[in-house]
Each structure stands twice: as structure tokens, then as C-alpha cells.
Length: 496
Image 1 (tube, rainbow, N blue to C red):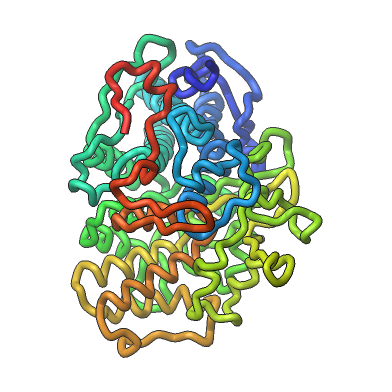
Image 2 (image 1 turned 180 degrees about the vertical axis):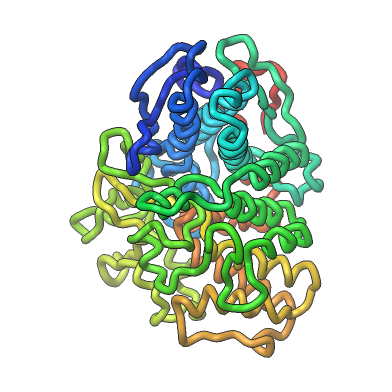
């Protein structure tokens, strides 16, 4: 019953989830509770309300773990080792039901986050903006809209047909845009996929206009740059959204705002986002300028993903095999790790650990390797993704072997593999270049939750892996069924 109501109810609009000091900024647990009437009465309370939105987003049931994990295990690069339904064996096999743990909990946490954003926006409109002043109000409202946009976008990738299937005309999601503080407000039809995307883009456009260009210099600047939204965050996320919509001209327009025309590629204004020279530092230092938005974790109780949610728990082997996780999913031996184009000298091979030999040989992903309680920062979007988004869009929009696209591809590949440099002459056709970009995406973002979206946005078959069958766009399981909790409460919602 708790999950049924989670996304509809907020335990008092004034629940404060976080404190305001540096590493504890984004704790997703209550620190103080105040009444609904006074939640927006002071600047500190309003700021705490805002920061709690990030806390909800980084829940282990959402972007702190499972939303990312499902994006990989639903694809083709991992093999299930434990056959545990609680940790996604049905997601991997491609047959989750309406009442599956993954289907119910991801839907619930995403809509809970959306509702938190809606309640916050309602509170700002009803007096909170006057309390903090116009400048801060503009920033805070923009951050709330960006978190809401991420939440709706994530839901679309699992519970709705891809945009390419009918140009967005298929059923999308119930589009809730006002806060719900009690029962009796559940009935709402599913808006079309196109309409949900339109709302996501509206939120991101509003966010771009209202977010700060950067955060003040000082000891917390680097931390705030990656854990809170700034203008470049909204722009970067729009490149992802337009990629999944297949709107390549719009993607190019957005990416050009934060990607220079030639290497070394950098953002010329706002946060100086650029590629980190060493890929391993992206997953150890966490606060490099490549990390546009990440979910921070600490060892403080309640400030890490929790039981059976962390990325390292799923992908790293157990301690007996030299890892820090539970060995839930090993890498598919027939997947990207067997691609001869991924050279043995590529530094990203350092994220692969082998165990056993012969028929018992297994490969594991150790990109996330902080031990329990699993404090790896979880990447939401990195600058390398923006570069590859732009590269793909340039080729698809012109159907040519685009020279800048090749340079963008090289920027990502050469960072880890200095032995491979592409030229325009490396590709016989535009399709060859697109395939190289897609391969690079699979290598670069392994374990970061993008694989499922990359397959379904192009209406590609999800390949078979191990004993799990392939899934074509017309097959059950290509997209998930709607949560049984939603269907029980919302009489106007239809299933997939």
C-alpha cells in the first residue's frame, strides 16, 4: 500500500529532507518537519525544499541506482548471474509484469519526485517567490523544472513507445503538473508521447532561462557545479531529449551553445565544461568539468543508495572474486567487450575485471568500485555524451561523412585510446560513421544507463543475451507495462 500512494502523496509539503552544509546538501531523508502552512515561510526552509528535490531524484530506487541499472540490464551487454527478481532478473529477461518490483518502484519514485517538484512550484507561486526574492526564485523554479523534466524523460524510456514509433502519437504518460497533497486526484488519461516530450522541453527551456550560468567561486563551487543544475545542464539534457526524438537539427542548435566548433571542445560560457583528460578520474574525483550533473553519495546514514540499489552492488563481482559488489550481472562475452575495435590499450579496459578461466571465465564492470555503503557518484549526464550526441546528429542531419562529427568522435576515443584516430577517409559511407559513433557510445557509457534508450530510440531489436530472448519493437517487454499501482488508482489510465 505504501508504494501505491508514494508518488501521489508528500508527507506534508513542508518536510525538509536536507541540511544546508556542503556534502550533506542532497540527503534524501527528513531532517526536520514543518507544517504545510509554514514550509515556504523562510528562505532557509524554501532552500531545503528545493534541495530535497535532488534528494528524491537520487533515491536508490531512481537515479541513485535502479533507473540507471535498468537502462543497462534491459539492453544486451550484461548477463544475469543470480536470477533474483528483486534485483531485476525479469528486467534482464524482458518479461516484467505490472506488479514487478522494478515496474512498480521506479514508477512510484519517479512520480513521487515529480509531485515534490509540483508541490514546490505551487508553493513558490503562492508566496515563496516573494520570500526569497525574484533572483533566487527564478533559479529555484528553474531547478525544480529541470528535475521534473529528468523524471518524465526517464519514465518515457521505460513505459512508453519510442518517439520514432508513430512520431510520438502513441500513449505516453499521465502528465501531472500540479501538486497532489491527498487522495482522490488520481484519475488522468495518458498524454501522447509527443505531448510529454513537449512538456519536458518546455521545462528545460524554462530551466535554461532561469538557471545560473555558474555557482559562486569558493570551496563549494566544484561540488555545486556537478550536483545542482546550471544553464549548461539544461542545454546538455536537451541534446539527449532531441536525440531520442530524432530531431537532429534542434539537437545541433542546442549543442552548439556549449560545444566549440573545433577541438579541444569546450563550453565557451557558463560552467567551463570540457573533457577530462583521464577517463578514470571521472569516476574517482567526481567533480571534474566533464561531469555536468551527478548524484553525490556519502557514508552518512541515508545518503547512499541503500540495500540492493547501488551500481557497484550489481556490476562488481563479490569480494571473493576481488570486487566490492554482489555479482548480480557480468558482462556479455558476446557483447561490446568482444569488439576488436575496442583495443586492449584503451584505458576504458581498466574498468573490466576478469575472474575464473576457461568455461568459467567472466568479465565484470568495475567502473563503480566504492565498497559498501557504495558511495560512487552516479552520473546523470557527462560532456562526452554531448559530444557524441552532436556527432551523431550532424551525420544524420546531412547523411554525409561530416568532418566535425569525426573530430567529435576522435575527442572521445583518443582520450582513452591514443592508438586510434579516425579521419574522413576512415569511413566509406555516412552509415559507417554512424555505426562507429554508436559503438563508441556503447563503450563510453557502459554501465551508465544509456544502452536501452539507444536501442529503442532507433527501433532496433534488443538482441538476445544468454538465455534471454531478443525483443523486437512489436514484442511484449520491449516497453514495460504500466505499474499496477497506477492502474489501481487511476481509472482513466490504460495499460501498454
